[in-house]
Image 1 (cartoon, rainbow over the protein chains, first blue to last red):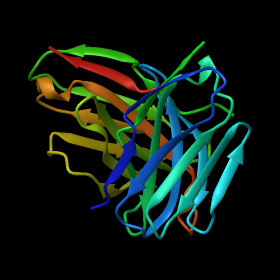
Image 2: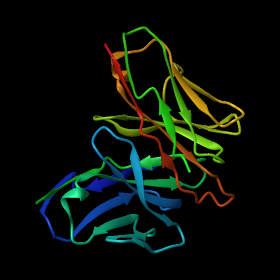
Image 3: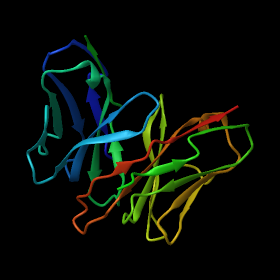
Length: 113
Length: 115
């Protein structure tokens, strides 16, 4: 069974700092990996989707990388802002698992003004 | 394009009751998945429906069931509610491609509290 781990569980940084969130998974046979953001009590907002054949994806201040062979992904956030404060979740879609995504437990990010 | 909608947004029930949650996917999306989110277990996959058929199922007891209608709307039912069923229930829709490389779009969730 796919296991997804996110480190750190919580992170607090001053505004303007660049930061990296980590995600690791145990089974490299994946279709894709998706990063989500979740605000308290709300649903998930998709940030970036990386296909298994891709190495990275960028959207604005966000950059996500994927190293399938080592089972790792990172989400890089440049010039962090207080509005970036949220929980960030990574999810992988394994081959042969239908449309099921396996989620990590998330990193709770606080950006201090 | 309207996003994924879930109703109701909040629900309070007592132990032993049953509950039905509804999810309307993005127009054109035929796959609907359900997830349970709790502080202790995180996000866990319940089941997925595609073209009115359950295609995949997570490791939950039979008290959790679902269905999908011809217009792709989906309902999830939980019978004989237990305190541990208190959670945020999230629905996600996607437009499955042959390659399986699709994005899932999530609704705002239904927060269920069992007393």
